Image (cartoon, rainbow, N blue to C red; front, side):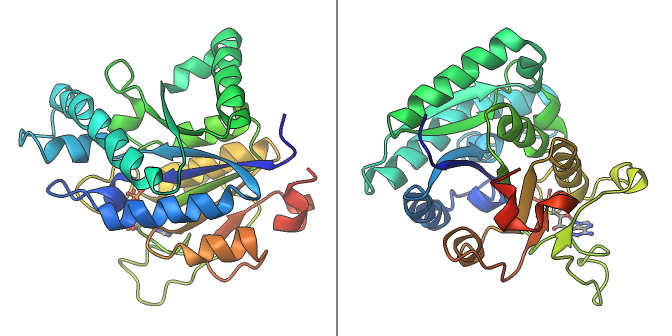
Length: 267
Ligand code: ADP
């Protein structure tokens, strides 16, 4: 196995598409970031966006489950084709894996999937993972891959999950409702009552809001891993964190004894 640290980067639907057009500039910026990160890290990308991209081709009611699944089936090849174009200019080969949360219930499936990931990374190929929405519905209904990406990080041996969202990080209260909300730059523990709060998605293709991100962070904290939540339109913050080892914004969720990002890799 490579000596590079493994990281998982998750990007949400709202970043990639508004249901009418695919945000190719954003995809290209992400591809450039990943190209730079791959010099030092083995990167796995988890990407939502299939339903929203499917909606650019077939304008059906996206509020019924079956239609959502149909839109995901239409959008998934288009999502991957857009990524293929964005990564082609960096000579990065991509691969697609469609997984569901319950795949990790079986040790056999987890081992097979991990074997595939290991082989792809060993050959310098970028794995791009999405939920298999034709047969699994948890993330399409609630979460937009937030929790799936935490399972992926843990079961595939990554110490850090980076969630790129439409918000700068985790605030002490909803910043869309309160002007005086303050960003929390370091979080070691998430209280149970916070995890049970109502979900608060922002935008027409968002499904989770902050709660599914906190659930993902809580899962990783319990396993001794870490998560970083940052704005998808401010990719320089991820660069600062991972290439300059400076936290200039965003929220780092890490275990108390890790002493911040530096210690994460040694946990
Ligand atoms: P994405 O589609 O990028 O995954 P979501 O819309 O699902 O993002 O979740 C992020 C949203 O969660 C924010 O835009 C905000 O409206 C909402 N939110 C509620 N409470 C908080 C909080 N305490 N800190 C940050 N965001 C919050």
